Length: 283
Image 1: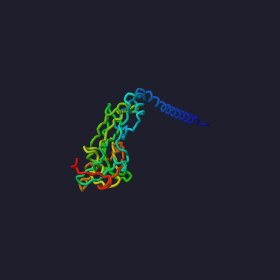
Image 2: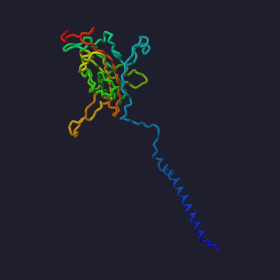
Image 3: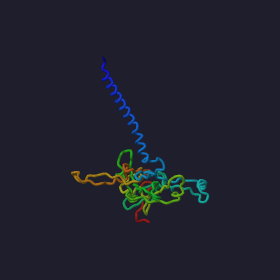
Image 4: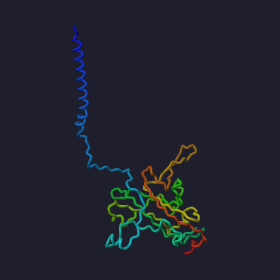
């Protein structure tokens, strides 16, 4: 005779185990639903959200300049004023051709000046970053003599013409109708870079260091952040250090943008044809 009691007991145990598994599965499936129901009050809408960021450099700094226009083109902009809203014209070309009498510069001796020096140069840069209708980024600029970025040399070693352009000073805003009349773009917030003193801009004698005869480059670099700083050891043990400002070197890690404008010119030697040096006492 077969013992059926054990079979019934085992069958009942299997049914209970199956029911337990089914119950666990149903419970797991119900958890997300409960979580959704419980979290409805915490949902955040994905529209009409305004996020204000203060650490993003939205607009880059860049050089700007106007272009010569015919009378017909200017009057097409405005019949009343015959003027177009654009940045002012820059007074010098990128290549100051020494065959042009206006660009025949000379290296003069002590107590002598180049009477053919430039009357002064003004360049223009813009940076559209603003806060509450005011220009936000303080711009600075440095003049670099014979700097070649392809060589990997740091720009700070080539800063020159400090008597004309101080890399530490913030560029001043330059107001023209271009500021408020420009269409379909943010206000430019133009700044002026002025290279001049009371006697003009002397490329061959005013660099602050000797300039040899021949061709040279003048690069104007501008940036919208403080210049890069690096730590320099001031003690032999290396226990003390100080920050040194690398003027002319943009601080890319701090979010800086920059732009460069380069000009080529030639310096003649005193005594060369077309050289016009005069004593400083002469009127």
